[in-house]
Length: 125
Image (cartoon, rainbow, N blue to C red; front, side):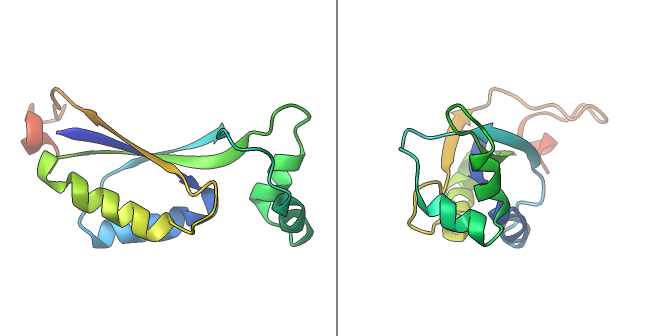
């Protein structure tokens, strides 16, 4: 089993959610997060503020290093479905611009369904 953590743009959440469901990944956890990458300030943010984009507005409110609102998704999946999951997330979220997101894959030792006691992959379905 693997845990796939994806950090994506806020405005891509609905499209990502729909694509994951259609690809056979209906179970996930999502959190609102703030963060920043290593890049410098993108002055295209100013244009985003002019058109009322919530991400751009949020970026300009902070006096310190800008923290950008994002969504962090966590999915625990069997090893043989990781590639399909990653391809789905990338297909929906890749714009070719900075800030498209990151995906992290980590091993999971075990999973237990509290209600039934099922373990490992059986607890995922």
